[in-house]
Figure (tube, rainbow, N blue to C red):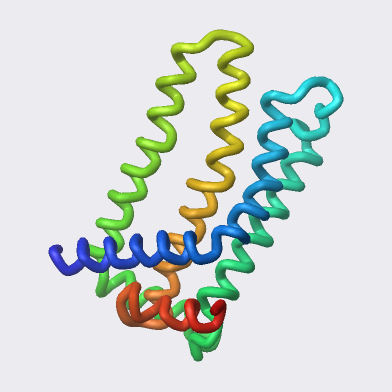
Length: 178
C-alpha cells in the first residue's frame, strides 16, 4: 500500500506541475466556462441564455476542447497506439489497485474541501449574497478545481497507458509542450 500511496502522490504532484506550467491555457478555457457559470447564476435578465441550454452547451464544448488539449499534450510522443490503450488500462487497474484507491481517497478529500467549505459558507448567507457568492464560487472552480481534476485524471491514465511513475510518464509532455 505504501508504494501505491507514493505513486498516487507522485502523479498528483505531476498534475499540479502540469497545471502550473500550462496555466495560461487552463485560465483561457476555464475563463470561458467561468464567465458562463457566473452569468448563469448571478447575471440579470440580459444573460438568461447563460443559464439555459445554450449556456450549458457552450460550457460543455469548452470543457471537451480543454480535455482534448490535455490528452493531446500529455500523450504527445508517448509512442503507444490507441488500440493498446484499453488493454494497458485494464492491466494497470489490476496491478496498481493501491495507487488507484489512494488517488480515489485524495479525490474524495479534494471534493469535500472544494464543495463542503463553500457550501458551508453559502449556507450562512441569504438571498442576493448567496447568489453572488455562488457565482464567484463557480467562476473560481472553473479555472482551478475542475480543470485540475481533468488534468489529474488524464495524468493517471497516461501513467497507466504509457507506464512508469508520474515523473517519468509526464516528462514527454514537458518536452513536447516546451
